[in-house]
Image 1 (cartoon, one colour):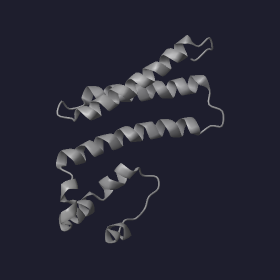
Image 2 (image 1 turned 180 degrees about the vertical axis):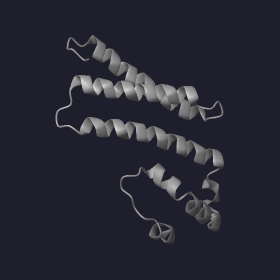
Image 3 (image 1 turned 90 degrees about the horizontal axis):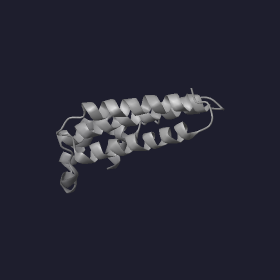
Amino acid sequence: MCELWLSVKINFHITFPGRALLYRSEIDSFVVKNRELRKFELSSPDWDAIKMVCGWLQCFRDATTQMSATKDSTLSSVNAVFKRLQDQVRKTLRDLLSTAPPELRDSLLQAHRKLSDYFSTFDASPYYTW
């Protein structure tokens, strides 16, 4: 195991799944060389799912970075970020292949519902948001 980690350059700005994508061939060859790890070997659909999740995580990371960029976020700026994030999640759901694992679709639906809950809170607010 140590030989794999010694050859991996660490980029702290990349998510763990994103790092796995960068080193897919190294991970696959390491698993092939170690029989006891064969049961954990990732198939092509597994790697495709990881790639999809990395895209979603990047959307959420971008939203977090944008809201954290200023010392005092305003309700209207947060609302705009949430709206853009919800639109991205909606588009991803629409474009999701029917062969995608149901857990991925369910996770996206839950994220969309949570963002919708926030919008209900915004709509009920007596404060100007746009």
